[in-house]
Length: 220
View 1 (tube, rainbow, N blue to C red):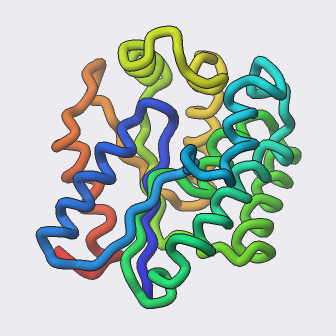
View 2: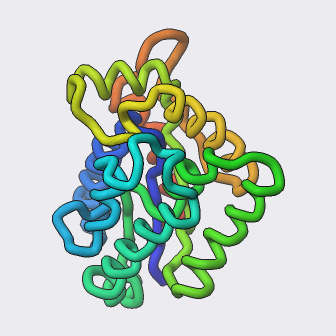
């Protein structure tokens, strides 16, 4: 049976770096795996995502309601599953992903509060896992980077460039608060990316991430 691991986090939290460290571990163990990253910006199925993040539907994230925005990302995930990794998943390969349905739970649910947020979260996971038939992950690890640190890293990397999510400091802060709620609600594993005021090294974070997923993968 396939094991499916998702790394989640707000922008600038180091997901791609940590996924690379996981893949190096899997390579060293001689295990077959498929590495994914969402959204797939080089694929036609991401066209609406690029329009949304590029501000064509509104200059701020809140200009597009969470249900509409989520469907843009859902279509890209469905296209990826059917064309890229369904056979590997059904053959029992390990699947590791940078973002997934869980990203909509982090980002889009932050646009809502109270019962509206609960209804949205129920809809999101039923829509993708039950109705669309996408696999649910076996373990979600949330890389928790405080928004101030995220924003500094994004600015140092991209300057004034970036999408409507990355440019909006208040939105990043909302996403992080919402993500902590979602982590608790769904039992995701949380890894802090800072110690005090200092960002932890990728290697330190990687050791903790591996400790959380190795049991799911059945390795040491």
